Image (cartoon, rainbow, N blue to C red; front, side, top):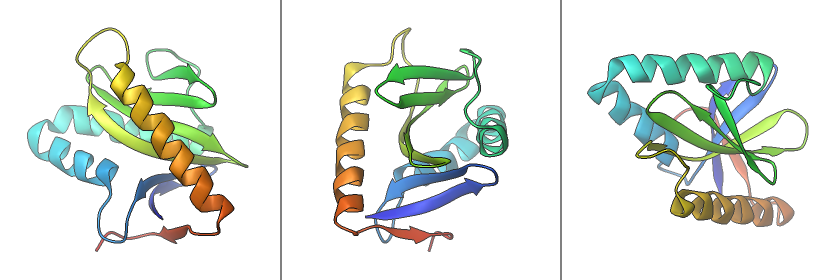
Length: 132
């Protein structure tokens, strides 16, 4: 498993991927092309989180239980979870379509978290700082 650095300051924010792609980074590139205003908002949220940790404001960050949360804007959600220290792992990102986080997104988050923890236990994680 490859973790791609999204931002790093007081907190490290990394996204799950493989050796050639990262779903969160791909989502952000597409968002920048489709909706620059939302892209700017979620980038500001990521930057703020890297310096101060996840916001304690439900308008900016929603707790999903079990150490999981989502960074959010009005339309964008980035599903994340905590790891040891000040490490935040981003599972995936999606556009909001309703009031509640869809069960399929929660299942995807839990599956990615399980895969991450297994890879971590097996010493099978590589950290990358730049997309190819």
